[in-house]
Amino acid sequence: EVQLVQSGAEVKKSGESLRISCKASGYSFTNYWIAWVRQMPGKGLEWMGIIYPGDSDTRYSPSFQGHVTISADKSINTAFLQWTTLNVSDTAMYYCARRTVITPGWFDPWGLGTLVTVSS
Amino acid sequence: SYVLTQPPSVSVAPGKTANITCGGNNIGSKSVHWYQQKPGQAPILVIYYDSDRPSGIPERFSGSNSGNTATLTISRVDAGDEADYCCQVWDNNGDHPVFGGGTKLTVL
Image (cartoon, rainbow over all chains, first blue to last red; front, top):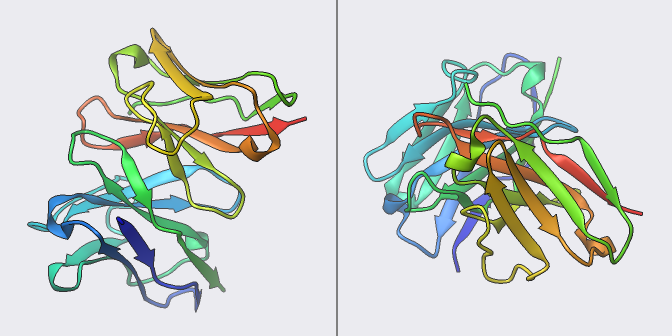
């Protein structure tokens, strides 16, 4: 079974750093793009960026470029989303999702999400 | 950048048909995918390639796409279909996915 298991909820303060993870299983991790998607409270889905673990090719949404870093570790089948400086406005649910091999494609499955809460 | 427009909400009585639209410039030339997100849960794919259903998705879910509007149709709606529904395409360069704002389906 293809699964994406995300790390647990985080509570941080403004200015702190954070890395959350998305561990893949049930398929060849290096052959599929993994996307990160933000959902702010009560709002819709926003694409943040995407990584191809096979060669770490990474693309960012202009809205998130420079504020987050997406990476992957092939040895442990895990993708990461990282902040060096969190803002209160980063409070949101963050999902990882696998893009189909067929391009441009759709996203399936999705992880259950990691809730990030940032206080001042 | 490419923009997808969805109505914020749609209401339908049980047993009736719900139509959820997704508008975009010449969206009929793109492949549209639909996700269902129930409260407190992650999104799941319900329609891909405009009208195909993943395994496990009931036949009551169908899709169409033409001109400037794609439509997700849910027939014989029941309370379990209450959720947010979001459409997705790729931008004109095929580099970035674009999500619609989502539509909350309420079963009366």
